[in-house]
Amino acid sequence: MVSSSVFGLLALALAQQACGHGYIWRVTADNTIYPGWDVALDPMLSPPPARIAFGGGIVGPIINISAAEMACNFGGSPRPSAIAEVRAGSNVTFHWSHWLYSHKGPITAWMAPYTGPVSAVNPNDLSFFKIAEDTVDAAGVWANVRMMDQTNRTWTATIPADIKSGTYIIRHEIVALHFSTGTVPGWEFTPVAAQFYMTCFNFRVTGGGDAEPSGVKFPGGYRADEKGMRFNVRNTTGGVVVPGEKYTPLGPAVYTSKYGVDLAEKPVTVVSPTGGGAEADKSYWDAQQAFLETQGKIVSYFDSMGG
Ligand SMILES: [Cu+2]
Image (tube, rainbow, N blue to C red):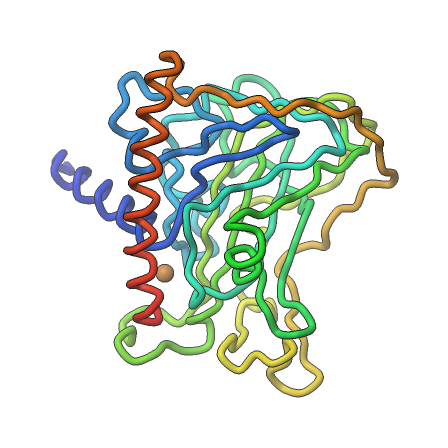
């Protein structure tokens, strides 16, 4: 028997993890702007708001690569009750609320086809293929740092032009390697391990081809003995720890479309976060911006502490 107050504490702890790290507050998919999952506002809405994100959008660190949560993170509910419509070959941009410079590591996006209602999907049954990946560049700058500094905390993946049309779950992940080879003073009790932060989203692809790339399941997509599980990001110069040693990405290679596509221009549209009209949307967005600012301060504090 677990009392409801324990669940309350768990929810609070998960929310704090999201606050101390970051979450996807917005997704721009093929020029349509969807709300992500606002960890401050959306849990308060009743009924749960129509979102494309899975599981309350909690982006807590997972260090056990055998955990069921490696697929789509903690909190399987509410399931997405909205779906993002994208043309094959178009771009999907994930808007991070914030992230930490200390949490250096790769960023990836994965897709897995599914059939039937999204409410019945078990993320652990899905086969994910990697569609985009950024690790460390020749100057030693990690993907998370570029995401924070150069793209205003956004990260973009392209839907392969040749994949079959249909419904997909997109899994977007940051791997933080800062404690993968050791901790720092003040964080001695944190396990030495790579940390995985992911969110899943509900998508429909149109205008695709006939490719059905093979994928991997989570858990299972990564192995504990993979080289990329450990990397001393503090010694990074040109992506090299031991001279000649580069970072080895985790999991399978990125799937590349066999052809490109020229998409017709599409105007930008914004999906209402409330469905309650312009005034309700404005107060939602105002509250959202205020919380994003607060969350940025919390994140900067953790970042300055090195963990
Ligand atoms: Cu952290």
